[in-house]
Image (cartoon, rainbow, N blue to C red):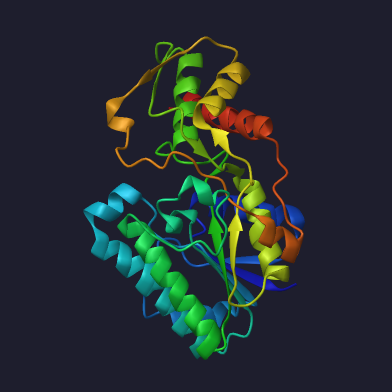
Length: 302
């Protein structure tokens, strides 16, 4: 069985992918040691020991707010860490495929006239995190052309599901509702702007998309990963409340509002479907039910 090296395996998506690999048995999963720094000069030795047949590169700093506080560290990890990985792969004679996981945030401000946003829309990143992803994308493309590394670039949009950190909007809603159900909080819910839309995809579907790109993506190409559906954040909250079976009073927290909020987002996912046959298929209701159950269990142990 071929070995897939997963960097960033401790993160939200990484844990879901490891679970997906265990369920499907398509690859033997390998990971870097816990707390291993992707920038380490020891990476070459670690790769020699693993001898991966393919690499899914998730390791990155991902907080937009954090990137404004420390852009140097974000650029060091997200760009130079990727550069270090590419060099280590070259130096160990790697001949497989690298999937570089970028972000839909690379598009920046998206004009509504361009929706759904396709891979050919010019990138206009609006925060240091997104800038580091754009830079690393360009690096991977360059290496696919000049160093003959079989690199494919994935741009996932908002993915949600059990295991996500409460810093993210749907996980925050689910945790707050779980605490209300447990009697640990009054029936009030803090939220930001509920009128904005996003393209939400179950993280388990996203895991399937990465494996589809390993199988059938094309070298040097960029692929959006999303549901292709535009959903109001307020509608997601309403569905969560309905699943929970409680009455909750949402209240807007000014600290959760962004002056430059992107009003609408939806991804054009025709390219990944055409090239690989992948499409998101987990219903939103199941995603939210599983997410709420995850938080109910977590709150019970707090």
